[in-house]
Image 1 (spheres, helix red, strand yellow):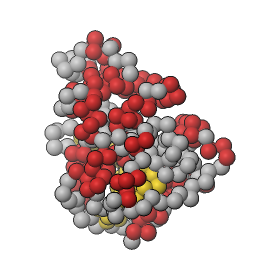
Image 2: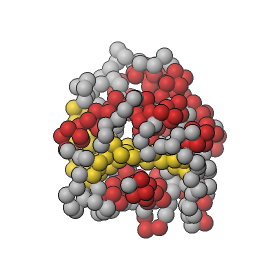
Image 3: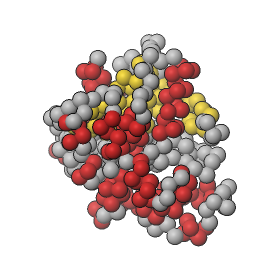
Length: 320
């Protein structure tokens, strides 16, 4: 589909990408949403925790929400979307990736941008156990890349999946990795690295044979983390192999479900390749919206309902 002209016009203060990103990550709060946790056992004996919230009226519609790097089911960009969908007669499940729900997972592996086998397991679970007839997927950043890869890497997806909405998508992982290592993103880079290495030290206590203390000490950058842990734990040759095989960009031409990508032009995490204009123009199921503002997951809008959340609901209604 042709590129969609964006109607997002934030207040003056939030036209600054840094301010909108930091405000959304550290300041925003979402109140008055109740979640129920379900622990789901995965195919390899590990677990994922699912945080459910429900519409006031019984419904067979569900949105599956996926978070970004070092996120969880309680992040405002997750609960904000869940609350909006609940208020529009759609149940929501916030998926906590392995090790992201406040308790370390059981395996040496954890989660990564291309772990679509875990998303596939969650979707199979909600279809077989919960009996939903309409399922929508919504992902942020890392979770958005996972959704797009999931939709494009297989010949077909369950009929119940009707649409997908993704925001702040690092479609080209190597390019985004390079962007995160630039000086302008140093604060973000260091914050991510601190959280990741802290959790890795905890995991290493149970997997000393798989990862040495010296290896952890050698991790100075996010690239080092992916080279030493992410690739090793998940079956890739190295960080570059991981980036190449898990970037959703290569899978976009094969997506057969109506899908919206919202990537802000002032998102400092994204490289030029993360704006897939050619792919959108050549795939009738792929819609690309590139707002001038929004930073990284910083689509601040009125009444604490973010633009990407509002657009997700609009997109579903437009499709159906």
